Image (tube, rainbow, N blue to C red; front, top):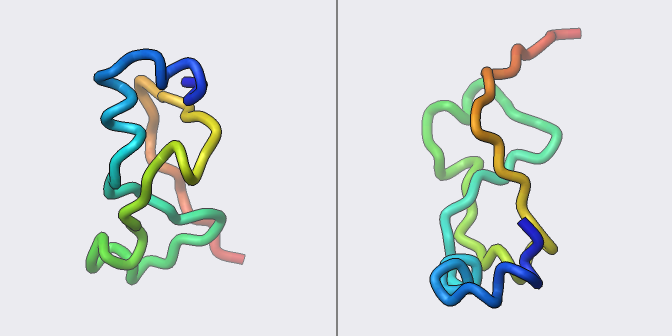
Length: 67
């Protein structure tokens, strides 16, 4: 979803312009993060943090490979 285009829809603009609790784990996810979402979620305004959003209809969990 291109946020510049999405801003033309009032309902979507309300969502992407207000603070949302979003997962933000980047390239690292520690097993102890499972204890609380506090460790890997942030309240942020999506259209201030990103240019767009990729929506995935269906996904499977990743498997952590220990080195």
